[in-house]
Length: 389
Image 1 (cartoon, rainbow, N blue to C red):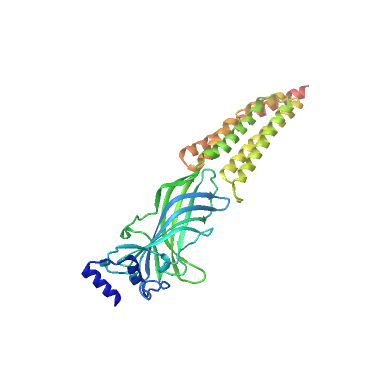
Image 2 (image 1 turned 135 degrees about the vertical axis):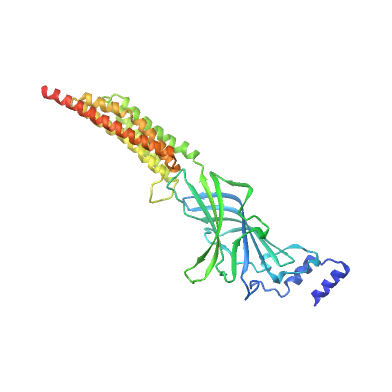
């Protein structure tokens, strides 16, 4: 009755009620513990993200950190008031209102809420906004490291309200906002390039019961900036492998030089392997860079093995066969270059990568066939000379 009298005075005398008076009248008898329209249709909750900053993408901890704004919109008829009160939209403390029990399903650490506010308008529309900085958990697929792309999900769900009571959805055109997750003009992601941002809504059924709950998912796809890794790891490994092929031009009779050079390069490749492993979590599969390290290790070890064979052939007085093996081994850098290109282009699965693989196979067939034919011929000639002697 008092509210109607105040309303009548406001209309007749053109006086605007103060914010405190409006809030007092709206919240009188309001129960913040119950949802709007109890016993009626479910409450429609529209959600929206605005992402400011993406940081601390950490495969070691399977986590990433986001600085974001969460916006929610719903209608609570209990908060409706006549337009003549002169306040089309005003702020109110969220603690005084019913708010949806929403949490981040893949949250890793307790969220830091920098600011939270609510605005209501005269038709009972509630606009909730909160600023979060929080860490999320996800699984990283490192098969193609350091040329990998990762999908970072943010999952929003309500566990206390099923779809019979509350429907969680993304903003649409009717909500008057963007229908896709928005990015701040100052958005940044250190050492990663943003590829796409997608949103979806699904239902989830927890094991404790068979009730369906709305499940909003935001997926941020980022691609690793591989420049640093190429300069720090791939390039040194490539040159270690090329340096190992220089030993094929060193006189095999100079044993300390050949052995010392090969062992030093072998230890260098092992050291780089430990450095790379320190930057990655413990996983049960090899990454692309692990594969390349294994290839480099194999080529360096092959140079030592080749020297052992050549040196032994000189000791048993078969210099022609030893020289033939040296000449063939000097073509190995070509194979190494082709393998390097193939390993780091196969992730793109382009025609060029398949052409390189074809060249590798062709090289292997030609060199292997040539080596076998010439090797058998030289070996036969040297055996005949030994028999004559």
